[in-house]
Length: 404
Image (cartoon, rainbow, N blue to C red; front, side, top):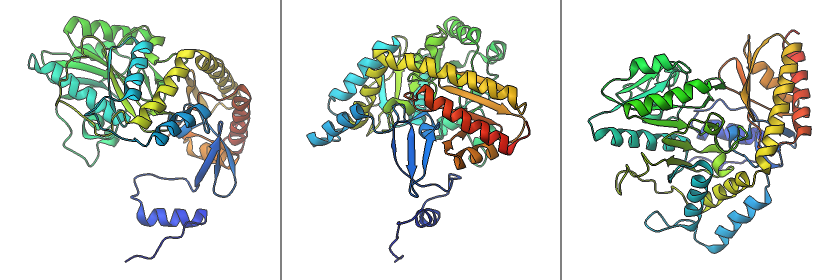
């Protein structure tokens, strides 16, 4: 029997983690223990301004009182899980709010973005099975998750390495190239899946004509159009869902990350062409739409429907972009600034990791999206003052690590 673990210091936790936790992440030497607003604290008493938000997950920041109250209400009721054998008020409320905000009709709940995309891929295959079609077109440089279907749909070979064979009949077009998609459509095609804004691929927004063109192609060829809004949805662009910035409505939309404000939940919402494709027994998720997760989702969705949070995202997102453009003028190593709302990215002509590390040492948490891109996905509740403070820390990190 191995000795009992002592976890009293940062070093204790890191050493035990290396011994007992599978090394699937390259973790930074920090142990976070709490947070308030848009700040988080570590085990050594350091405070950080958080522009990562659990990678676009903690939409309401930390210590949100409404979120806390809803979760405690479920806990106090004593029923934390009832399975989908029975109806659940929180899940029905969350589904109705998604329908109200998106215009789509019905929702399937699961636990993560990968599961939501897996559900969407299965729905697309079931839709295509009516006429013997199974091919799904995804995009190069996309990211859809780590399960076999989702990772196959991910158009980045590095995520496939060592896991072949991949799921068959998934092919890749060039993002923002309608011609590339059209060339891949044949009599076996049933669906197209894309992110309105590529996240892990480098914070690359779709062009409006691209998404509108995809909508027309799918209508013309009887294909399902699937938008993966796991990272770019839930108010991050300043609208409830990113597709609303483009006026191109999908048949299927996948959600997760910010949907539960830190509580694991995923969702697949479908419009009229796809809402009733799946029947009982076709797909399921034991914990999908659990009472706690659905209650958390309802809090986020209600906040988005009220409007003030979205107005704030528009203001803080515009300020963030303005300050990043100012940094670009000062540091030519920044070759591009792109994104939408509070989902922004800067591309560098060098590796981004030294800047991310220096920023953390100065009290700002950032996350990369590839080797040369730094992404900014703070809580939607971030203030203009915090945006300015973060930009100043970032400027200092650039001054320390790269030539001006």
